[in-house]
Every structure is written in C-alpha cells, then in structure tokens.
Length: 79
Image 1 (tube, rainbow, N blue to C red):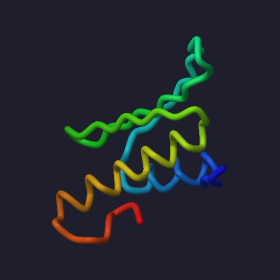
Image 2 (image 1 turned 30 degrees about the horizontal axis):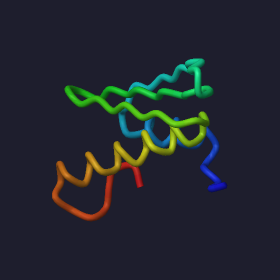
Image 3 (image 1 turned 60 degrees about the horizontal axis):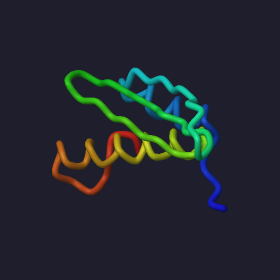
Image 4 (image 1 turned 120 degrees about the vertical axis):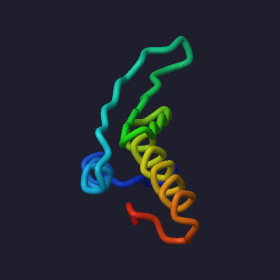
C-alpha cells in the first residue's frame, strides 16, 4: 500500500496557493469513495479514491499539473 501525505498537509499546500477545497465520503456498493473538489478562479479539480488521504493527494497532483500546464514549465506552484 502506498503511503500518502496526511490530509492536512495536502489541504495546506492547496490552500496556500489559493485553492478553495472540500471533500465528501460516499458509501458505494463496492465500498467507500472519497471525493475531493477544489476551485481556484475559473479552474476546478475533482479527485476520487478509496481513501481520504489518496483523494487529497490526487487533488494536489491535479493542481500541480494544471499549474505546470498554465506556465509551460516543469515546476508547479504547489510543489
């Protein structure tokens, strides 16, 4: 099992660069699903995973990829 950063760490990274974030846990017939959403300006990210920490980490990765694509560089705002 992969170790993910603590939820609070991912949340703080995202908040520090201007993302408004939230999460929800949904009971699904195949198990729980965590969904993390975020908004910054006109941009949205949505991540889902079976654990809360994994969903937040995926959201952070999406934000980092978006920042890289907007700047056209390798390093992201959230890194």
